[in-house]
Image 1: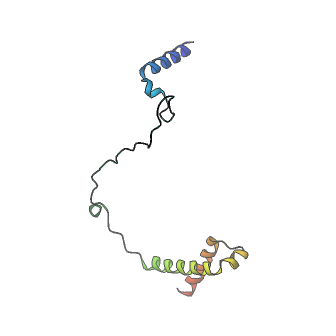
Image 2: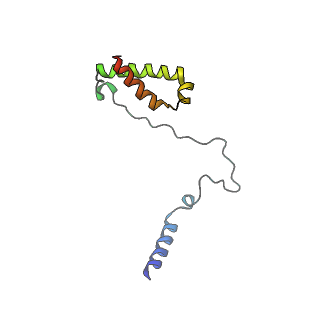
Length: 110
């Protein structure tokens, strides 16, 4: 029984506490008000950025195995682009083809 009374008091207190401008939709044009010619934009905040060289660690060099895999992936991509119409007719998609192609090239030692 007290809950509806508390809710009504809370709603009334909120309505009195908020100014009239906060209760209206700022995107809705008020009757009799002139339309703004262009929306006002706030100036970007200027922040002091820390030097990137001091905060980031240097990248670790890629291993030999990673470089070989990169080269295999590039070669498979070139094969896929050259033969895509035939491969898609056979039911291949890029994921399936790249997996099989990289295995094939790795077995060859590339």
